[in-house]
Structures are given as structure tokens and as C-alpha cells.
Length: 237
Ligand code: IPE
Ligand code: IPE
Ligand code: MG
Image (cartoon, rainbow, N blue to C red; front, side, top):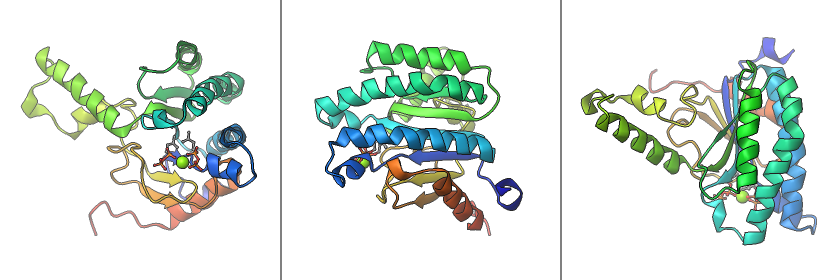
């Protein structure tokens, strides 16, 4: 059993990248890569539940992804709604608590409704915390946190001089998950692309060549094995 041998990271974030390349390599339109990515999402959630990971955060659509051609954006909005619709009941049965990180603005109403409905359906689940970052940007999250803090200052609920790292963490989209242990990026790019800027301050980073549609339990396990081999120092000795 994996659990007895390895140190399992509690909080894992994944930049699910490489769908377009997966499709292009097969002479298919890019959207076929997104479609194929659903299998990887399902396999990864199942494996995260099995491995006893506390929180899994998946980057599904960034605040920068609106720059893509309108038909790809439209596809992704519909596809994400359908994916949530198709998978919610299975994840719910697995005791997964689903939440969404990101801004509501620009998201189609039908998608937003599905996000609210799914959050509500699974809100009392006590197993894996699954966060789907959709219309998410790390800087947008920090801007939203600063706004929230500013309002609390104006309302007299916090004093400017009492602001510390905990105060900031509490204003983030998922205040219960202020720090990640492991950040995985598929498809090889060596950048964070505006993901969880505050929360990955001391995460171990593992970039894998595998394209997202090909990702599965074995790759998550490979990342956990790598994590297990790392020495985390947090600035100490
Ligand atoms: C990741 O795959 C999915 C999203 C960003 C929505 P990409 O679509 O970025 O795939 P590549 O990077 O072009 O291969
Ligand atoms: C990051 O991937 C965003 C998601 C996985 C949703 P991108 O493909 O958008 O990132 P860049 O453009 O390579 O930085
Ligand atoms: Mg990409």
C-alpha cells in the first residue's frame, strides 16, 4: 500500500497543461485534447481519494485564457459545465467536497449555476477537498483579498497595523488551504502561469513531460514519490 511507504503531500495543486499539443500531435483540433483531458481529471480525483490527499486543486481556466480564440473559449465554458454535470454525482458519492476558485465575472450563467449547485451538493462532504480553479488568476485572487481587507478596515473589523500573513490567508478564495505542499505541472513548461501565487510560497514544484490527457494515477504516484525524496527546509537547516 502506497500510504504506508511514502509521505503523502496533504495539499496538491496541478496545472493541467498540454491538451492542445496532445490533439495537434494527432492531427486533431485542439478541443479534442480538452475532451480527452476529462479522463485524466477523473483518474486523478479517484487516485487522490485513494491516496488520502487532503486537498487537490486543479487549474482549469485562467484569467489569461480569455485571450484564446472565441470558439475555444466557448467550447471550454460549455465543456467545463458538462464535465461538472457528468462527474459531480460520482465525486459526491466518494465524499468529495467540490469548490470553485476564481471570479464569477465573464462566466456564462449556466456554468455559474452548475458551479453553485455542485458546491451546495457537496458542501457537507468530509473527504477530499477538490478545488477547481476556473476563471482563476493568482493576482486576481490577491487583488480580491486586498479589497476584502480594505472593506474590513473601513468597517473597523481589522486594524491596518494588525495585518499579518494569517489575515491575508483568511481573505483568499479557500482560506482553509493557505499553503500547498506540491505543485505539479504537466507538459513541461517551467512557469507558474499566475497560479496560486501566495499559496505555493513553499510548495515543492514538479514539472512532468506528460501531456495532461495522458496523465493518470501512475503519474500522480510518480509525483508523490518525487515529493517523498525531497528535503523540505523552509529556510532552516
Ligand atoms: C491546458 O491545455 C488547458 C487549458 C489551459 C484550458 P492547453 O490548451 O494550454 O494545451 P497546450 O499548452 O496548448 O498544449
Ligand atoms: C495554464 O496553462 C492555465 C491552465 C492550465 C488552465 P496555459 O497553457 O494557459 O499557460 P501558458 O499560456 O503556457 O503560460
Ligand atoms: Mg498550455
